[in-house]
Length: 120
Image (cartoon, rainbow, N blue to C red):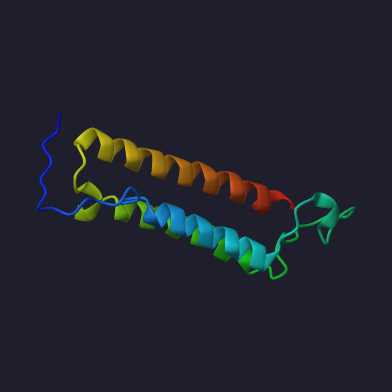
């Protein structure tokens, strides 16, 4: 059984996952704000040829992947903070970091591939 040191504050259950949770919520809010098309019938080029954007402003075809990439980088950076390690063993730290990075990477790729290729 691990020894509890009562002089140290307990670490938050979300330590090391704040960027994942808060960033995910901000991404969801951004998607609600941008209101991209969700079906091919809603695309501006439906029934025609060429490329169109799923977003009302086509510049978000560039910005959105950059925002997703920044989210993943922030999650990876957060895993190096000492507050992430407080009161946890090495295996737990590695497992939480791996899960956060894998989920954010897979989620970002799936989201980007869905929105980025919908109207192309």
